[in-house]
Picture 1 (tube, rainbow, N blue to C red):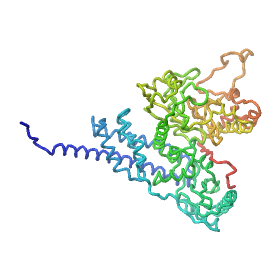
Picture 2: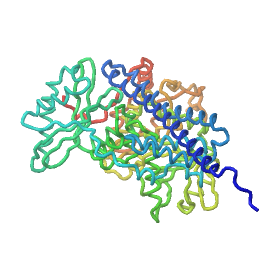
Picture 3: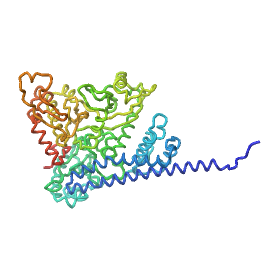
Picture 4: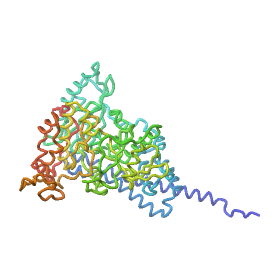
Length: 586
C-alpha cells in the first residue's frame, strides 16, 4: 500500500522557488554591472572638460581611476553574493540557472557582450572553476548567438559637394567643443587642401560623396581624435583628425587617411581612449572597417573595455586551437631569465609564464615582477610599451605543446603550471602582442632599415623617459619591432619610475689596477645607475651605430637623465602623438 503524497504541488513550488531565486540573483548581478557601467561612463565623460581646461594631470588620474573600476565592482558583487547565499554560492547547478536567467535579461542590450563578460568575471571569482564547472560560464557559442546590433548608427553623415571647406567647418563646429574652436575656419581650409591632395592620389581621382564621423571625440592624454571616414566614388577612406589644445587654442593638428596611420593611433602600445559609446559592437564594427587587420580584442581594449578584450582574445585563441595542427612552439628570440615565453604560430600573440627561480644576476621576486606589469597597465605607455593581459587558470590539451615548451614549463615554472593527465593548466600567465625582437630584426635588415630601427630604439628610450619610465635593461633583445616599424619595449622585470633612480657618474679610479678589478672600487647603492656603462650595449656596429650615437649620445650622460627627472618631478605631462610629422597640417 502506497502512502499518498500529502502535497502533490510541492515539487512544482520548489522548482518555481529555485527559478525565482535564480532570477533574483541574475538581476542583482546585472544591477552591479549597470552600476559599473554608470561609473565608467561618468569618468569617461570628464575627458571633454579635461581637454577644454587643459587639465592633463587630471586626465591621467581619470585614466587610472577608470582602470580600477572593474575589479572593484566584481569584488563587491562577489562579496554580496557570498553574504546573501552562504554555502549555496558555490553550487554549480544553481549558477547554471542564474546564467540562463541572466542571458534572458541581458542578451538584447546594446552592451550585451560586456554584460556577459562581467557575469563570467563574477562566476570565476565565486567558483575558481576549472574543468566541468566551466559550463557555468558564457562560452564562445553564447557570444556568437547574441543578436546583431541591427545596424546601430554610430556615424553622423555630411553629404559631399563643391564647398568642401564649408562642410569641414560644419563637421568641426558640430563637435562638443565646436564653439571654443576659434581656428575652425582656418583648420577647415587646411584640411580641405590636405584631403583634396589625398583624394587626387587615388586611382582615377575619386570624388567625395560624403564625410561620416563619430559625433563624440576619442580623448586620450592631450589629444582629442575625430574618427570617421570619407565616402568616395571609389569606396570608403579612413579619416582620423587629431586635435590639440595648447596656448594657441584648439586646432586640428593632422589628417590621417590610411588604415596603417589609423592603426598606429589605436595601437596596443597606447593608453585606452575615453569616448562615450552607446553600442560597443557597432563602434568596434566601424573601427574594424577602418583597420581590417586589427584584432577584435585590441579594438575593445582600445575603447577601455580591457576585460572584454581578454574575452575576445580567449575566444580567438580557442578557435585557433580547434585546428588540427595548432601547437604552442618556442617564441622567437633569446631565452630570458625571468619568463618562459612561447607562442602559437597562427596567432599574433606570445604567452609569458613567470619562472619559479631567476638566474643570476636577477635579484627580483615574482611579486615584484607582477608589480611591474601592473605599473605598465596603469601608466601612459606613450606608444612604446606592449599592453599585456593577465590570465589565470587557462587549460589546454597536453598534445598542443611542443615537447621542448612543455619540458621548460615543467622544469622552470612548476609553481604556475600543472599537468593533469592529458591537460596542462596554466595557473598564471601574461599575453602580449608578438613582435620581432630588435636584435633579430637588425641581423635580417638592410643598412637603411637597420639605421631607422636603431634611431627609433633610442627614441623609444627617450619617449619612455619623458613619461617618467626607465626601462632598466636596455639590451636589444628586450625591444621589438612592430609591423609598422616602430620599436617598443616588452621586458618589464627591471622597469621602474625614472624618479626612483639615482643617476651617478663613475668615480675616478684611485689606482690603475682598480679599473681592471672584477669588483667596483666605489660603493653602489640599490638605485644607483651609471649612464656611462650604457655604452657597452648602446654602441652598435657600422653605419647604424654611428647614426645612433650621432642622435642619442646624450643617453650616455648623467646630465640627460637628471634633466628628464626634473621634468617628471615638475609634473610635466609630455604626450607623444601617434603620427608622423609629415601628417601634420602645419
